[in-house]
Length: 325
Image (cartoon, rainbow, N blue to C red; front, top):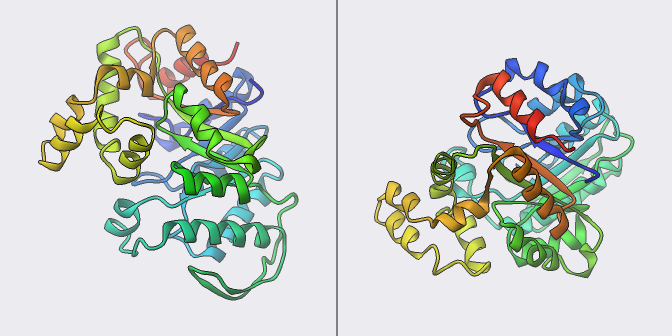
């Protein structure tokens, strides 16, 4: 594997305690550190810290929503990070969904495909130093040019789950970011990018719990997946992947307000396929399977486990055990 990444911030580790972990990642064989953005940390601050603490790491957002920042502010934030870490930044954007955009930020969730497409077009022009002005389908820019243009311009990738957005990633972006998929799903997702996506980078967040305690791992997986697989975006994604019948009982429980029942109804086989677990050697082999299936950059999102513990020391032990050989 040419690239091998980790998701930050790490679970159970406060951001103030990350430095001694992140500094060691390159020596362990990790090449990348990427963030997400939901209801916890923002997508850029941890990357700024990681870029300073480990100057060889590539850092990226996987992903930041396009509707919660104006296009120019998003370009300025990305350009600032890219100036601080030249050649080591990737800007990953996506649509997110109503829970993040509307329910906690009070912003209408409108025309997600158009907004992602228009933002990608705007960012590619703005980050290249162009003067941008005009009416896009989802916003209008009266006139903007970055005062400080990063060299080189950071690549722009799209977080996508279904055919229209996957084709957009293949056609107009520098690559694809995806998560909550099984290794068997990878070829279908990659194929859906279309011929323009051939050879472009595919980044996948892979959830990993390095433990031989199968029941512990499944409990962790169900706690995560119960809500995720019943969210509108991921429910539709797995319907498209052919799991409508497999998840029907979970969806019924969720609609009825039985959230614990919805998690319990996710079959063991699907939990095992969406959360890599086992010994560190078994976990590495499963991650390698994603790469063989078409993922270019696997991003490990590591769960604490009984064998390694939580906190900075435990997570560092887990990352050392999971590091590429």
